Amino acid sequence: MLKKTISGHFTDVWALGIIIFEMATGECPFRGMTDYSTFELIMNLQIKWPESLDPQVKDLIMQLLKIEPMERLGAGPPGSGKSMEDLKNHEFFKNVDWKTISITQSLPFSKEESIEKLAQFKKATQEDIFGDKSDLESPNKSTEIIIQQSKITDLMRGYLQKRNPLFSF
Image (cartoon, rainbow, N blue to C red):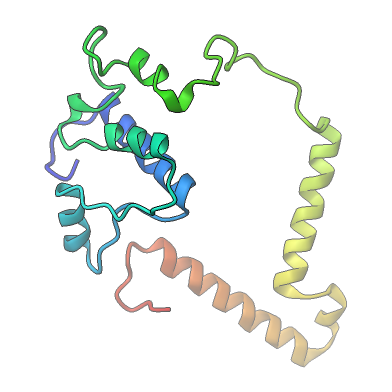
C-alpha cells in the first residue's frame, strides 16, 4: 500500500500480522516520530521485538509481515508453502479446530442480560465522565461538566484527525 500498488487478500494477511503483534505486545510494531520515519521502519521491517514474546508468535508474525506480498504466509496459492492452508497449519494455531470455528456457540449471556449489561456499562461510563445527574443542578458543577465534556470531545477529535500537529499530549 505504501508503494501505491494493488491490494488484495495479501493486504489482509499483513493486517493480521499487525493485529497479532498488537494483541501479543500491546504495542504497534512500527512507530516512528514522523509518518516518514514510520514508513521507513515498515519498508525496512525494523521491528522492536520484546524479549518475552513467545517464539511461535514471533515466527507467525515474521511470516505474515513480509514486504513481498506473495511471500506472506496465507497469501500464496495452494501448494506453495505460503497458502491459507499453510497459515492454518502454523504451530501457533495447533489447538484451533478450523472445522467448527464458524459454528455459532451459545453466548455467555442471554439477549436480555447483554442489553442490561450494556446499559450498566453506558451508565457507569457516563457517571465517570459527567458525574452524578444531581451534579447538574449546581450551576458551577454544570459548567465544570460541560468543560470536561468539551475536553473529551477535543481529545477525541485530535485523536481522530490523523496526527494533528497542533494536538499534543
